[in-house]
Length: 323
Image (cartoon, rainbow, N blue to C red; front, side, top):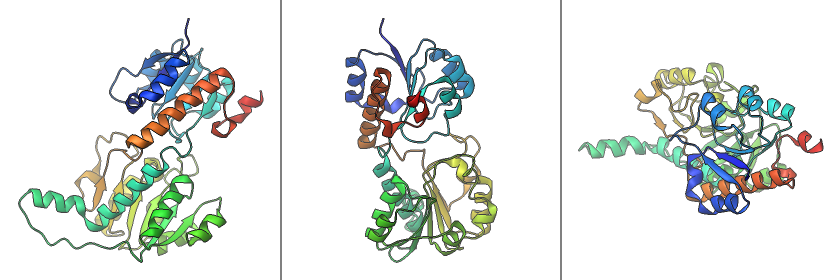
């Protein structure tokens, strides 16, 4: 009997190479039967007799992990781990892997696109022209402005490279400082409050965990310049959305652009009613190139882990390997 693997990300099907990798390795693929992320209840049903899972943003809670008795490997399609209970997986001896860097370029490019969109009011201008207007829309240049990067991991560094090419000055906040990269791209490391106070654009590139949840709350949003713009392509929970609505309506900041939200898809989002915010549907990693890189790396991680020869560099819980 062939080992079964569950694949939940809908875009995985767009890469035939990744599918072939799983099939040629001898696995029987069980696909997500819905055109959306699975719920906890649905995962409990789908993970019956499954040895490996390639997971997107579906909630792999402790309950799901503990009841999936055959599960041996969790292969994350991407790098965000806020939807996976790593402690529960580790306690069960289940290996968790990620695809580091696979979507960094795509998310960085969208970040720059959102910066341009909100600074030049491109979506509003498009809407008005389609309605028959010919407005004078006055925006802001990126050149010479200060970009504050909250997080300087792989994606943050890719954003910094592109911002440098636009002639922006770059501030960065991160616990780990890459001084060689900073010297190459003229990046100044500083603390978060100083970054917020000095930046014309603030872009978030942190993982979501207990230390970053609601990191940008009302107090921190009030530290920003009234002419500043906030960009979030990381995780919605890092930003207090209710505080952001107040910031945008009261003029604490000039505008925002979001690709991620506390609830996805958002059902009752006050931000939808504001004209100084640009909203996209968590599409940062959705390019053909990023999908191929993520799908193929996630497939290889799963295959290697189930065969006992996984690359330690992609393992989230190496203590499972040491056992």
